[in-house]
Length: 532
Ligand SMILES: *[C@@H]1O[C@H](CO)[C@@H](O)[C@H](O)[C@H]1NC(C)=O
Ligand SMILES: *[C@@H]1O[C@H](CO)[C@@H](O)[C@H](O)[C@H]1NC(C)=O
Ligand SMILES: *[C@@H]1O[C@H](CO)[C@@H](O)[C@H](O)[C@H]1NC(C)=O
Ligand SMILES: *[C@@H]1O[C@H](CO)[C@@H](O)[C@H](O)[C@H]1NC(C)=O
Ligand SMILES: *[C@@H]1O[C@H](CO)[C@@H](O)[C@H](O)[C@H]1NC(C)=O
Ligand SMILES: [Ca+2]
Image (cartoon, rainbow, N blue to C red; front, side):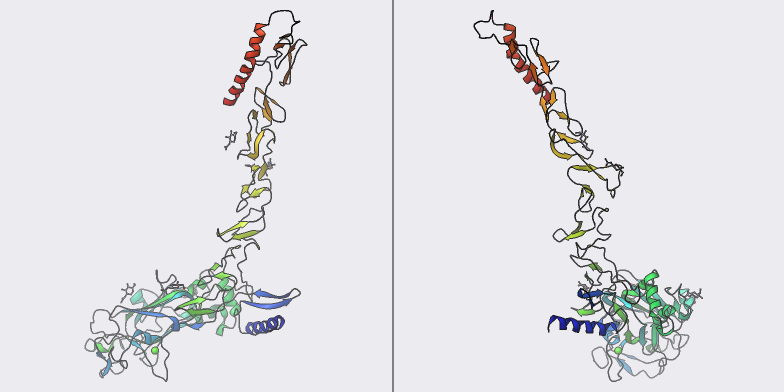
């Protein structure tokens, strides 16, 4: 296909998908003046029957019937104890996986426990359902009990792969007696208490084993508190999901646990002479849910035994809970249901393309870049003489203005080191330049005693203390002695007659000595300066 045809085909596909339902699509090609570009939307996978992906564990060991084989009767037929459970016979076995199988041809298959033959020791069992994936309920959990629903049970959930658990709902034929809780009705829930954990008596009272088999955890009625009857206004629900703290978390889980605490009794009391009619049997557990992908994926796939979001918006991770490598210029955020109808994708941005709160540049740069081999995001082209990952340092040759905030344009002050007097153009953090020998001052633009300034500091050639000009010479700017006509030398210490025949007189010893000593002396002073 030519590119154009391909684009059109995709566009049509996108439009078709868009019509499917809210938040079904993560992106679509739209045509603009600049050609076709991807538009991104908040998106989520469709709801799925999660029982197909769940791992089931039952406790305690030996709770499943049939090992050894045993007979049981039913509450409806308590004196006809001809049914048998035998783990070694496929036709008579009731292993845990029969709670999640697809039943065909009307044949009901179920997991069954041992009978309550050890009464009065409680007959209790735990069923732990795990997905190794964060899920969000989309409809009621339904647990189908054959031969009667338990009189006491608790549904629990975990948000952290089973490390900790919290109650989700209590079920009892007498909530007050068993749990000390007022029984509540789901229809009494209001927007302010939809997420309360309640005790319900609705599914635990004896109504006959055949007529009512299902125990629910009600999700749909809770949604309807916000979405209206028959979920007519999903916008209302999604808006609440976004704004109401804890609402989304309430429907979120990674594991579920059923704690079966007392089986169906078929009456008020346990009949001790016929304990073979008390047991638990579950034929199906329905968990309608969707993968939680933080509104960054419209697909969730089952790979290597685990559910995995197919992340879009440059996100990654099992739940699209972080930004993809190279796309960390902005802090990761979940997508948002708002504004309706397409929500906000909150796409992870390619490094170097934009800024975000993750990349703080204190207002000295508006660009960030991701450096792959260091795995850091760094500001690019810091202005105002700043530098560093967050433009938080001053460039070389500048120092920090302590009276200015980090985001002040005046935060860095130029060192302004004197080029001649300084070793280099950098200063320390209090603004002091590093001076060459003989130079001093913050900017190294002055000389210490014994030195004179001439495009830098040089040792004095003459001065008023140690390097005196002799024989009436005068010191000019510490650089040289201006000697009277008859004398010469650095300090005018030498007579012009010296060694000249016509000069009258003996060599001036004192002068010769001075001539000898003075260079030495000046050397000493210089050395002295070195060690100052
Ligand atoms: C069910 O799990 C809970 C929590 O781990 C534990 O305290 C309890 O003993 C378990 N019940 C059975 C019957 O294994
Ligand atoms: C759970 O899922 C994660 C991510 O897909 C995987 O790395 C891990 O091995 C899984 N754990 C189990 C017990 O399957
Ligand atoms: C929710 O609040 C309503 C009104 O305040 C109250 O009647 C109802 O009992 C509450 N339900 C629960 C489960 O707390
Ligand atoms: C230091 O910052 C303060 C506050 O912004 C500013 O008024 C001052 O001029 C700055 N000093 C220099 C030397 O730039
Ligand atoms: C900066 O240099 C000056 C002069 O050498 C010195 O007095 C000062 O202690 C130095 N400041 C720091 C923080 O090193
Ligand atoms: Ca079944």
